[in-house]
Image (cartoon, rainbow, N blue to C red):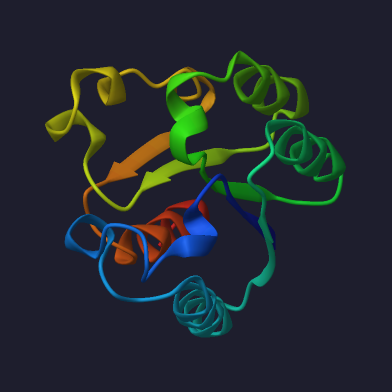
Length: 141
C-alpha cells in the first residue's frame, strides 16, 4: 500500500508557528514519526508539503493511479479551496483530512472545511498522532 502525506501552507513551520496550538515538534519530527508508523504497518509513504495551492492540486493529481490513499492537512486551504476539493473528488483516492488542532474550537471561519465532503474520514485535535490515526484508518487497523 502506498500513501501520500500531503501538507499545506505553514506546516513546514511546525515547532515555530504558534507552539501553544501546534506544539514544539517540527515537520521533520512529524515525518520521522510517520515513517516509523508506516514501517510498522508495512506501507510505503511519500511526503509532500507546499505553501502553494496549485502545487498541492498537482500532487493530488500525480497520485492518481499511483497511491492507494492520501492523508491531507490542507492548512488554511481547508477553509478556502474548492480546487483541493475538486482534485480529491477527481482522483477518487480514499483521503483522510487531518488537523493537528481542532479547528471547530477556534475562530468561527475555521469550522468550514471545503475538502471534508470528499474525504472518507476527518481526524482533528489529536496533535501529530492524528496523522498516525489516519494511516491506521486507511490500512483498516
